[in-house]
Amino acid sequence: MENGNVIVNGSPEYVRSCCEGSLQRLGVSYIDLYYQHCVDTTVPIEDTIGELKKLVQEGKIRYIGLSEASLDTIRRAHAVYPITAVQMEWSLWTREIEQDIVPLCRYLSRVSIM
Image (cartoon, rainbow, N blue to C red; front, side, top):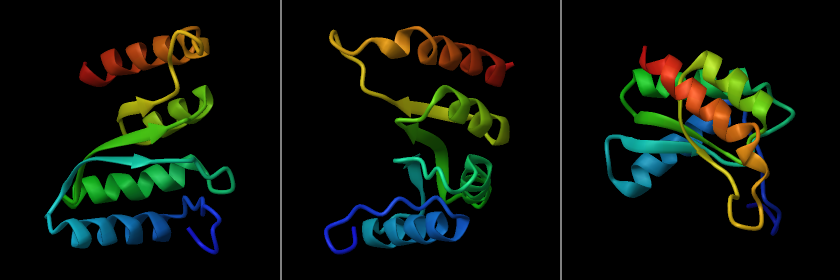
C-alpha cells in the first residue's frame, strides 16, 4: 500500500522481493502456499508465475495460488506451473464460478497429477 492506495504489481522483481520480505518477516525458510492476489493485468501472468516457479525450485515456496483470476488467466498460469489453489468469491449468492472456473480447476487438478 502506498499513500493509501493498493499497489498491484506482478512484475517478477516485485513478486520476488515480496516473497523474500515475507520469509524474513515470518522468520521461516519457506512458505507453504504463496498467493498472487490481485492479478496485474499490465504484466503477463506467465512472467509472474515464471518467477514464482523459480521460487518453488529454490525451495522458498511450495505451492502457488491465485486469487480472483479469470478463466483465461488460470489456464495460462497453470501452463507455466501447476496452480494449487484458486481463491474466488463463492457463496449462495455468487455462484457464477460453478459454470466455468470450478470445472476448469477440476480438470487441471486431474491432468497435473497424471
